[in-house]
Image (cartoon, rainbow, N blue to C red):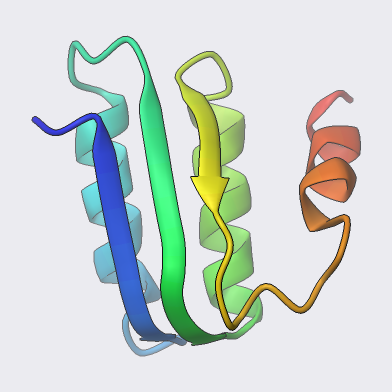
Length: 87
């Protein structure tokens, strides 16, 4: 299994389930760390954001970072996610 996953294109309710399965499979593997590269994501809807939040919560000890891209219009989203996950 790779220690970096690249996600690209449009992430919507129509395909966020596929992303959820991929992330889940990698997070439940024996990897010690994971980088999620979203630099090629052109659009992400609320279901895609929820999927990423779920992955962050599940793999909070494995996910060490990610790359921002065109869809990264939410400055501070990472800090907001950290705040949500610290509950």
